[in-house]
Length: 322
Length: 294
Figure: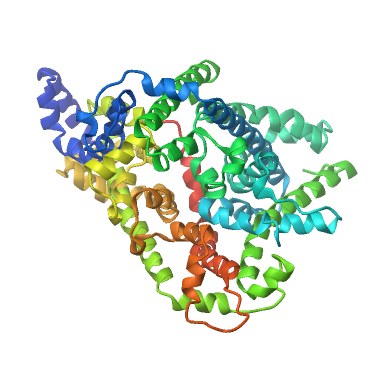
């Protein structure tokens, strides 16, 4: 290590003598830049080319003529979308469902984390943590299978329970009004246990002396949770909420499409921007219109992330995205 | 602490134990029901509905499922994309994360922004679809499930943050000994980053294992369906169970639609359930790497 110091000084001296031109930097670190090349190419092809491809939102895109041959039509595709009544429904559903998901998952995650933090038995804790985080690692198609046990009219577990209490069975797959509730329950089942890990980590980072001195002052368990744990969690909660709010314009396509699928009866409450775009693309084959919707979503989503980040930067500079 | 717990405190603690146990049971119950339904006869489910415990025990669904080659093919596809995808993704991710973690790399901020911007703004589904089907011709190849997902910016930044947290003098002293950057990355940085490597490999592996959306968009050839998409196909139509039971011509034979669905689900989630308890600690670790501010 001692020998490294004079060498470093020496090389710094040489560096400052040289002109820091682009080519010298590339030559000096050519292997490092070479390493980043596969990633740069992948991102260029699969992230930037689709961004440039957005021009088709302003075209009457014809697959045979391609991106370069299709005629431009200005904002025609957007007009078509904004004049339809469906836009208000899908935008509302996207934002409404996301708000429900964010709030409910947050409340349950924080509650689980607090309960875990109070429990002393380490074995119980590890065992239960393994169970409650497990659902997060299942794909939505598997979750859809599981839902198919609970919701059918005949033999579904939910209807069995309804019957047990003397209620009539309900054809849930025809009744849109129940679905926001079901989706929230499914989301909590899938995400809340895993979400609690971050909160639990924050709680275990709290200085134990604070709890001890509160105990000495005679504070009850409840008061300690209310006056120490929750206030200490507040920054983490707000930060994660803000980050989630940045994505509020993106529906959870995987979840909703896997579980609801092409069931038009449920669209009134479950159709989100992403499923709408997918349908417009695959069923109607209207590429220009669906990419116009996609651009509208990306644009609003982008503005939202920037706004949220500005707020985060003010509130807690350390946790801002950039 | 020698302070005696009050009755209220103890009650609250009991409530917490109960609450966690209830939530854990709620998490586990669907799995148990799937398992018991897969081990039940088709007629029992049709008569009594889905139950937490099987009413009439039968291995018929598994027998039918496992004698058909479809499930093995899908397993092969899923294992292939998981193993190959995770390996390649880790190579690409580390190869980008390591240079970006070095303060001596002059243009690292430009590259970082280039990657970061794609997290903020997306081209959307339609243009990706046109690109992949029309211009790249990747339809109906297994690579469409692998190549577009090889670099997840979020995972890359996690890895970069971990590399940043390693003492720089480690790489510097190797450089003085004449090692080049690629050697340093593979022989020094990666070996000291094994916990983070494990966590991020698992994130990638789970993402590849659970892939179905890309298959739905780009794959028509049934031989290339990954497990998760096969599950979706099985759920959406009864064709699969009819195919399984096509040789059986008994009178009053109920085509085992519901039970084979559940058996296929069990076969799909089996590896995750068995491996998960051993891997859980790495996931937790990986999640907490993210809290190291880079």
